Image (cartoon, rainbow, N blue to C red):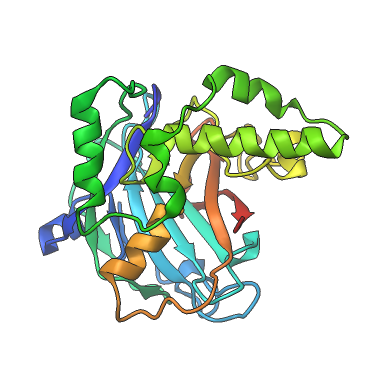
Length: 300
């Protein structure tokens, strides 16, 4: 995961073998680990994975195989509160990073029950982000239309307009993120940030997650001031190394969850538009999964 951007699309219902395969990124189901959690693990304690706002149990969103050059066997486990109004803030989310202690660890995961709800389990198809699509590329247009007609299509007006919009050059849009005190300039900046987001999403509209340790996150609006001013993310609490962005959950995940899991009511606004996970750049190892830093951008 050290080069470029890897995207994840919802692929198919996960088999029992998929759920135990530590190299398989997936949504929902039950978390699996490199080794069983000890009986004294904080993750086994009641309330450890509860939402910091409503105090209810969070939902296990998914786990992602995120190996790197220095730690080829890594997992990210994501938990989040799906109650309306909770997901807008950091205290509703918990992300755990696990690193295999040795190459001898089995590829088959170990299940250890934790106090969290879950979704039905779906595997993710992980692939490298394609190059920017040109308007003259009829094949890409055909694929886009095919996706819109599929059962996984996201019913968003702005997504339907993507192929007809002529976005500005991405570098120009990114440069405009420097900001201004003028209200009109600020509105232009917000528009440029959103255009950059939709332009990148247009490369593969079915993506629900992004993995990259070298590229900046895609914000739907201006990043939180704590990010732009350097207060977030803090350094790793275990080893002191700086954190860097790695995993991003996209708003398409919300829509697909409602479509694929209709039994889970999607009433109300869960509060977030994108979730960005910052992880230890040193990939430090500990006996227990390490908690990482989450930045949540509220619904826009």
